Image 1 (cartoon, helix red, strand yellow):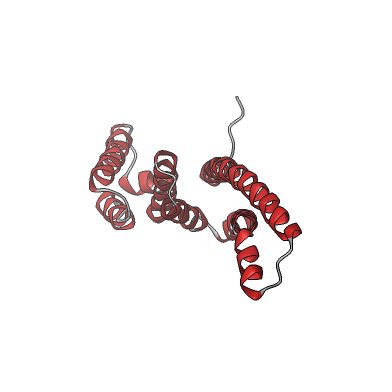
Image 2: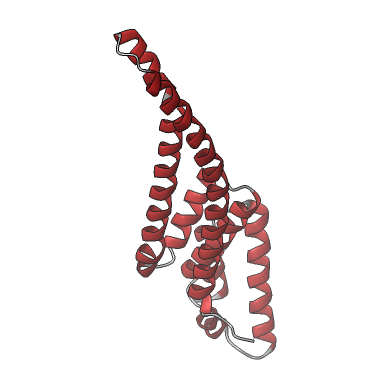
Amino acid sequence: MNKEQFLHQLQLSLRNISVEERQEILQDYEEYFAIGLEEGKTEEEISKALGSPKQIAKELVASARIEKVEHSASAGNIMRAVWAVIGLGFFNLVLVLGPFIGVLALLFAGWVVSLSFILSPLGVLFNIIMGDFWLFDVFSAIGLCGIGIFVGIGMFFATKALTKGFIRYLQFNVSLVKGGLKHD
């Protein structure tokens, strides 16, 4: 594949990132070709040494998505980053999707427990309406509500920590796929 074919395929594969970033990346790869031609290599040799433009684009898109999550860790950005990393290879389906679902399940369960404990005084109101009121119910509901607030505070910090940890895990995974870990 020659320089024009390589750059065209790379440009098509980079459609999911901003125009500025795309132009910067294409300019970098044009420089790779210029340096290679100065060294006496053919365009075909250079493109073969660089690798598949589609795989390069997948890696760059995954890195861009993870970078975006680092700046703004919204649910949408995290999902896009997870799918970008999964797109790097079938093996990542197991390495990324499994832990991601596990982390989401833990967070969801913690938030549901917190919310149900906080809303436990509504059960006392229901008992009053039904005429089956016990003073023990009031104290139990107040205790559960307090526990629910503490669990909610803990879940807030756990959500932040697990989000940061999962982002680091995605970064580790991308660096592993890009060429293994470099030991200095």
